[in-house]
Structures are given as C-alpha cells and as structure tokens.
Length: 491
Image (tube, rainbow, N blue to C red; front, side, top):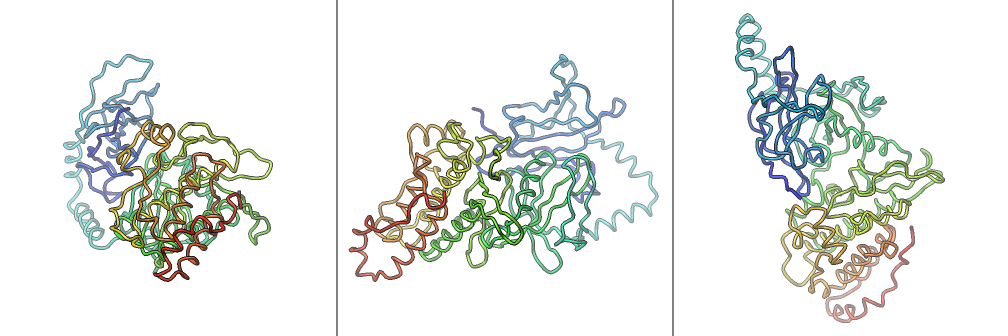
C-alpha cells in the first residue's frame, strides 16, 4: 500500500484579502500520524482563461490515494474544478481529464494571474490603494472580532441559532490542533476562551453528526466536552462549518503525556473521570430533565480525544463518528470499519462486527485499554525509569501503520503493547494491568464495561491508600484475590 509522502504543497488563495491570509507561497501540511496528507487545487475556466481559486493542503481522503498527478476526472465540466494528489508540491500542475473522454490537454502550470492582477491593482486611484493598505495594517496589529453570522446555504441543511452565542463577538486567536476532519482554534467569546473546531465543506457529514449528537437530550455531563454552539461561515466553495465548545488549556491526554509524567493519584483521577464519562455516554437513561438520553457509542476513543481540565479531570471529545442507539430501531446506515487504525479492535480490523449496541460499546472498551496503557507508561509510581511517551503499538508498527500492519499485529499475531515487569511490583499498577488486559481482550464479550472500569479504579485507589510501604510485598501476592466488580455490569 502506498504511503503519503506529502510534506509541502503549493499554496494560493484568490480571496486572500477577504480571508486575511497570504496570497501565495508554500504550505507545510500537518495531520495526525496515522493519516495521509494530500495537496489540492480548485480553479475555474472562464471563457478559456484559467482562474485559480485555491491551492494548498488537503486532509486524509481516499479519493486522493496514490495519485501523483492532480487531475479532475468528473464528467461534464463543473463550475469549479477540483483535484487532489499525493506527493510534495504535486498540485503545482493540474488538469481536467474526464474519465469518459481521452485526455488531450496539457496540465495547466501553477501560475497565478500575476500580470492581470498587477494591472487591476494599478488601475484604482491612489485613495483606494491607501484604504486597502490601511485596512491590512489594522488587521495585522489588531485581530478583528468576527460577529457570528448564520449563513443560509442549501448544503449542510438547516441550522438553528446557537442560544449561548447570540450575537456575541467571536475572535479566533491561534490554531491549537489539526485532526482528521479539520482544525481546532483557540478563540475568545467576550471575556472567555472557547475552542472552535472548523470543518471544511467536504467533511460536512462529520460536522453534522457531531452537532446532532451534542444536541441530543442528556449530553451535558462533567466528563463530556461542553458544547456551546454551531455555525456556518462563508458560502459556496468557501463555506466553513464551525463547532464551538469549552476550551481546556491542558489540551488532549496525548499532548499532556508527551510533555509530562503522572503520579499514581493523577493517573487514577484521569482514568476514573474518563471511564465515568464513557460510562455515561454508553448508558440509556430515561427520565432526565431534558428528556430520554439514548445509549451512544463513541467509535473513535483514543488519548487525542480525551481532553484534560485544569485539575486533570478528563472529558471525552470528538463525536464525529458517534452512533446513537434507540430502543426498537436499527443503528441506521453505518460503516463498521471506522476510527483510528492503531486503536481499532480486532473485530473492526477483521470487518466482522455485529451491528448491535453492545458490540459497538465493546469496541470502545478495547480502545480504553490502550489509553490506560498510555497512562501507565508515563506513571512515576513504578520502581524504575519512566519510558518516553509512545503511541500504542508504536514499538510494533511505527508511527504510520497501514490497515494491513494493524491486522497482522492485532488480529493474526494477537499482540498488545508491552506491560512492563516493574509495573507488577506496584500494587495499584498491577491491578491496573489486569484491568487493561480485560479491556483489550481479543474476545469482545469478555471485555469490561466502562462502569466496571470506573469501579476498578476506585478500588485501586482504596487498595493503595491503605497500603503502607512495608506492606507492599504482601499486597502484591494478594492482587489476584481482590473481589473485582462483575465484568458485564453495564453492558
């Protein structure tokens, strides 16, 4: 399977003044380690003259895989041409070659209409030029606040106004992260910081799904990321879809563990609050104040989607792939093999999923086991050196595994990340290791529920809090005799 080698792409934006961006140059491409990166180009053909609309980096898209040339192949010339490709600067040249017609035209070179633009720039009177320069200076020195505007469009469908936003000014400050479906900005809403997740139009389904999940009854919980509002910005090809949520400065668990180690008490607090949030998400709860809360499977549990509040309380984020279950109704149209490859359960990698509620919840629990392993690998409680942070299976498959790589390791060889010997010498970590193994069990039916994991962590804290240092040797020999809660308590 070909691997993406895209590091940089040609960048151009015909609306650079309106969007307040650079006009042209080279754009470095960023993304999750497991995801491919591509380049893209969009252009118009106006009476035989090629006008570039945008060029730059494109997120992981199967339609771009293994394409070294940027070619639009749709039948019938569209209003706006689009193509994507893999490889450094592969969007420098682009062409239109419909599948049903033999391509005869040469690729168009990436040359923004410099001379025509220069001509138009010299025509306006000096006063207009001065206004443009002054406006640009104002932007560079004072980041302008954008009033939230709900732009009516036919594409993603109707959207209700965000009651918590009203007409409050929302000011984008800096990009905090980039992911599969878009980028996340730190922003300011009056005197408060918020997070703004911006989806490009091609990822409208993920935005729509996440917005609908957040809008369900019972989705307000201390251990689920707080939703503030959703908006549309721009129009047509420039349409952006925004989700506004609470902002947490410590960021994701991945980022935190890269830069920090955790004590035993910190590990327990993070693990317990993460499990509590997932247990609540998985539960079917009738009779809440705002209605009936349905059971929801997350389907992309990973440390990147666990955010940490200032006191290290965990909250679960990113519901773009989440699935809602209602009594007496099917799960609807869904694809089983979704999520992040290295966190995929064996049955997902095999494509052998039972499309029942409990099957999806158990898939989440497999990934919880991997996240708990990440926490254990950065814990200072064990008597030994703390490893540098590594992703699950990074030792086995590296940073960019293919689906085939993960199938070989997880399904055929039935390997799991290494549980260090020194962890077994700490009574709490020894109990955690047993919990981890029961979460990532190859047999889905044998996995613990989220509620059971929460109870286990509480029990670990109690066990270690009453253990004096001189008693540790005795306790280690007794770990297997601890009365754990039943595995299937909430499945």
